[in-house]
Image (cartoon, rainbow, N blue to C red; front, side, top):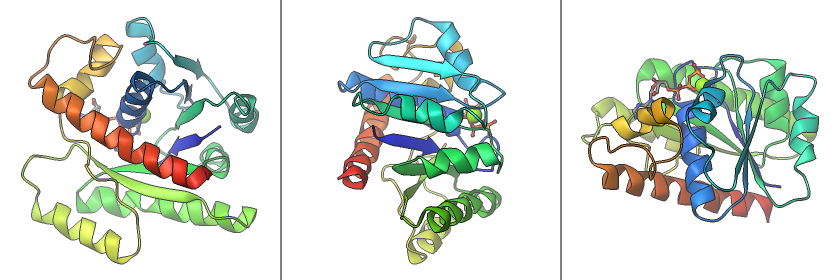
Length: 220
Ligand SMILES: Nc1ncnc2c1ncn2[C@@H]1O[C@H](COP(=O)(O)OP(=O)(O)OP(=O)(O)O)[C@@H](O)[C@H]1O
Ligand SMILES: [Mg+2]
């Protein structure tokens, strides 16, 4: 039961978008995926309500602080990938979801403000590691990245790398197709064309592959 917890205390960092891209790409590649919507704002539920769920994706919503550990463990022995989407806060629910993770992903826009708040997720991971006495694999995923990398992006990336933070390459680019997933539901193959769909699909697949690689390493 590999568990990916998507956590950042920064609102609007791209958590739910990352969750849907990962779920749909991993399912397309043949994995069974369970999406847990733990955000009271219910972004994943909105996505799920727009169109029939793509094959191999299950989804559960309204999971509270008292249910989260049980909800994750319920999918324990069936070889599924569990993806947990959380509210942009630091809370006990977030900490519990981190404690159950094989991989914690922190999506982040490459701006100073977002990075400053986003890296607080690392602190939450460190606290859970201390409490559990085990290490939890963690990676930052830059989101909404423009084709031409800003100086700020390069500087933030360098600073995180210097601190030993794992960064998923490629980042998730800013793409109309990615935001449109919440308008139409489904995946990048079923939504109406938005801009260069092949570029978006290529980016999403390469991103998901890099995440999957870390997940297999973390669960070995
Ligand atoms: N790679 C992307 N390309 C284009 N638009 C994006 C991308 N990632 C996110 N967005 C848009 O940015 C906004 C915030 O993204 P999202 O809802 O995924 O963030 P979040 O971290 O889940 O927010 P919250 O903290 O409110 O749950 C949304 O309007 C989404 O459509
Ligand atoms: Mg969200």
